[in-house]
Image (tube, rainbow, N blue to C red; front, side):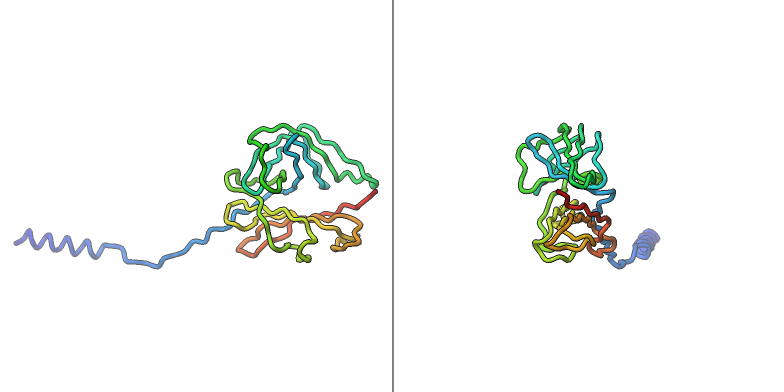
Length: 203
């Protein structure tokens, strides 16, 4: 009899000690954000040559991460940088030559670019198409390269380039080329512009 009572007390104590069901708390995963000072260059996969338009010159030893519409193709280490002259002597156009350190560039799919100062995810990053420009310009007036860094279907980084006037306004009567870099903002606020620059068109 005493044994039966002891077992009953232990069962009751265990029931009282059991944790109560609580609320289910959803933890939102933030989009993978790209940090740094992003720049891009168009890349020739046949000879590892890059063409870059930026006020900050690429440097020997920099590494271009090459991306197409499917994945990261590989990494090019820059071995030579040549300034491409223009009528204004701006030093904003560059040709790079390099050696392929990793990957294979022999069969790119769709558009292909190389990025500098962009710590992309080597497993998931790819170029994606977008249906509007973050600049708000009429669709089709901007050249856009958009990178989906975490394979969620949305771009976390966009390079935007368009013809502009002396004040940086988009126009068909351009006197220069304007470039902008947009990245995913915090707390799902959409894309935020982190840098813009203008290069005069000189002949």
